Image (cartoon, rainbow, N blue to C red; front, side):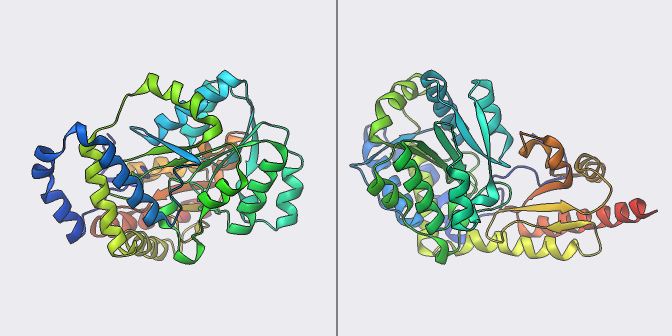
Length: 367
């Protein structure tokens, strides 16, 4: 647990509950008494149905099997075991959150970079890059953490069609999908099923709802990979808590009712507050505005670690950009990441202190 007064490092959701979410929390004692493991199949089925409805995705039980996990990182660990056992190489998105590349590297999976701006590049530029890919697997994150770069429908279809034509496997981390604007949501699962490629989609709720680490991550696995993933998965866990899944389902239902308005509203409100405090500093926001974190470029002769250390002295914890880059960590010297999913009242104070610290540092650097 970080001891800083303002923890803006962790990308999970630590904010107050909406009135609808508070009602869900108030119901937990009764839920705890009522939920029974014998209801596991029904509880999980209702969860998946609600999840896919909120995500705007097709729940295709014929093409995909779902494997609940304790954490999304545990799911990545399962995938990494599969990649290692099969001797597969990976083209991995960059930048990306450090535990993703750390897990793959620990399993000695050969890695090549996929620059995340290609997700939003011109179609010809994306295809030109894909034609040079020699690895067995594409491992992408969309929306990407930390930049928010996102594959729109046309480029997603290009990537899927490339995998279908070349026999490559696609691993897609969609853990930040619920922050996407409505006009950018499209049915990825239908596109994947229609192409009939080998693929795994990583899903999560911990980045979106404040459920004190009770969450509902899972892997959606295409049928051609189910046997291998199932065998590895069974070594990690037999089942997840039916209470946790039922609780998370109720949280998702609150977002179905308000069309994701509250979760997206908190991120947008805190982003506005942060950006206003950055005026007159050397920090420039460069993330996509639907993302639940802010990716800030340092436009001064100071490194990310120096900025992080200075902020830490004033009780604010943010992440330096270095660990998001795995081919050349020095590229991350020019970035820091600030988590936005915090209580707005607390975030106003944290952003004000962050701005004050950076304005002071701006003057010091200019001397």
